[in-house]
Length: 503
Image (tube, rainbow, N blue to C red; front, side, top):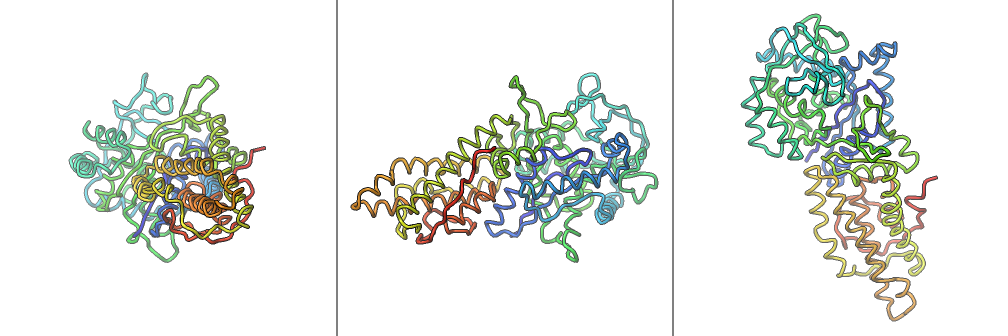
């Protein structure tokens, strides 16, 4: 089986922030989990480098769009190993190979009769790179996302006949209610379709920073057609000498933010239909990370609004795994949610350091002290078995639907159960009574096995910390397995604090 997951590709008009890390880590968790299940995985991320937002940002800085793209693409590419993203390829839409493939696909759209020439006049947001319908225009002709005045644009464009796909898109949503998740985003997209689709600009003639339209000299493709096609084009050149399209297309998941829902759930499938290309299986649209200010108010984290939280600073203080954990523990994936350095610190200390970190330290220390560093090769405690029953099915079922936070909740319930088990069994008391040696063996064995299982299931979320823990437990394998499936008998090692107090 194959599994293909993508992130949005990120605009290079500014440096990365935590919102970009959030999307990427979400996709990475799914990719890592699927590798644990033995799937053949391809994980794609990258940068969106054409269009008016990039050209305008470059002009403000007095550099060429290419210079700005090269500089900021490097920053995004550097973010990937820093957040432990296991992406298989990083695409840049300025890559000539991507350009050629976009032209090939869009030529099919043209040849199939879904492009025509016309005059466009309407409201345009240069930061969204989007022409707004009347229903999407905010008060006083402003962008409801960026809170800026919209431009009234008039230019000769080539148009994409989106209206021709009204019925097919409606039927797609009716036949496949899981095409867009979560449900509220499905409802939003379907409502937009049922409101009546209008043809949209396929090209721009007023800008030059883009991919040339092969049948229309002087026009470049409207940036969204160029950008959306990255998910398809990348497979043809991501691996030298091999076209991976047949192996991985259609994508299993496009992970996106809700602000680009319309493009991915309406424009994108319609474009693929027009070109005769199979549709992706699911689009998962997550919410905004909202920064809490001193008053407790929450605002969307956005570089254009100037309220970003630097993921590099967060990781320098708390570590990469803490960032990965916090984003999906604090904010339910798919919903908006507030984040702050205060709640970051609280989660770090109470859950990572105390609940998981102390559990690991105590368990390994007691095995070292009471059993010379060897996990007893006895059966696990039958009392714990019901608490771990169903974990495998729960986590895999939830992650099959990109329910990342809910899966993490299920795993963390077992972390807390193991902490209660330590207090209930009190191994330090059992160790004082030779008559209870068997009970102590079973307790230590059950703690080690429970830790192993939760570490394996937590591995996609916190790969560094769980690798250290599994190695210390003498069970470095990360393949998914059930409680009690490892026989015990392995030697353990001392482990420095997994989540030390930050400086």
